[in-house]
Image (cartoon, rainbow, N blue to C red; front, side, top):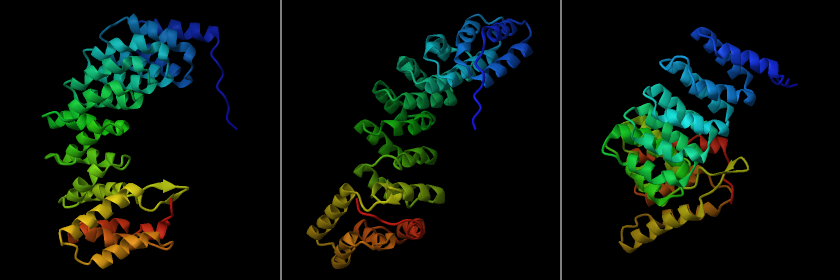
Amino acid sequence: MKVEKEKLSKKDLKRLEKRLTSNKKKTIMETLDEIHELMDKKTVKILTSLLEELPNPDDWDIRQKIISILGDLGSKNAVPHILPFLLDGNPLVREGTAYALGQIGDKRAVMNLVVLLQDKEFTVRENAANALSRIGDARAVDALVGTATSDDPEYRLSVIPALTAFGDFDSVIDALVEGMKDDVTQVRFPAIIAFNKIKSPKAVEPLIDNLESDDPLLQKVSADALVYNLGWGSIKDGKLTKFGQKRREYLNNQLAKRQIQGEAKGTRNEARAIDALEDEHVTFTDITRGICELLDLSKEQENTLREYLGTLDQDHEIVKK
């Protein structure tokens, strides 16, 4: 049985407010910890007042703590009081402020957060990008894409993970596809992982290319995303579905293209593999055979996919949409 916390009385609030006016930093921090544990929105007014009139402006850790509590409280009333600290001289305060605004999710913060995408500190940019992804306002897309395609790999890496939230925009898909081709391996990872949540025909070829990476972890995440984009990764009623219609059309187009070019070796087997998709008892292994031929996968690529898919037949059933 869940026991609800008692609500703060006026007497409690007065006590907390008085302790926050102490000239001892330790007392203030202990009181903030108590308020954080209480998680009562009645404390918002006290916290915002303290934030604007700190006894010692050099106590950046107190500012950071107050902003963190306001973010966890999710108080939209606190937003105007928090926003100025996105430009604080201490990067930890800027980082914490961006995070708090993401927790609150108020659209008033969008354009202020966009400015932080050009901050010199990686973690500040990262938290600003993540906050924008949580808020989900389309006004942030151009700025995020611009930073994701920056000449500086540190800037690209700091925002690419946040692009997943805006997968409906063509410019975002294009930026993520370019990210999968990045010369810096670290930048490729979040771009590839994004396609575990986003489906796009544009992702298929770059994902196949990444199966040839020397990095086994990069191969693994590429296989994950490829499986998802080919339609094996969709889940319905707790079971993996068969190919999505778009992925099936893509593969059929590839087969038709090869037939026209006179390069369709083993066409009968390939066609049979596609026909097998209509079979109630088709396995992932059955599908893999045809796909490896249709997409001209190398032996190494094929082995990578097989290794990933090998356990799926044991754990999941392919079901019709």
